[in-house]
Image (cartoon, rainbow, N blue to C red):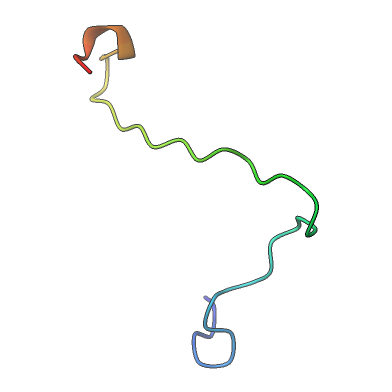
Length: 40
């Protein structure tokens, strides 16, 4: 568990100032449901 008093934003990420961060992907589908079955 992270100590939010001494480290309020959590541990540092392993990415330098000139490195790209991985793309954030938000997707939560019911079990057995595919993206093709969802209306956008």
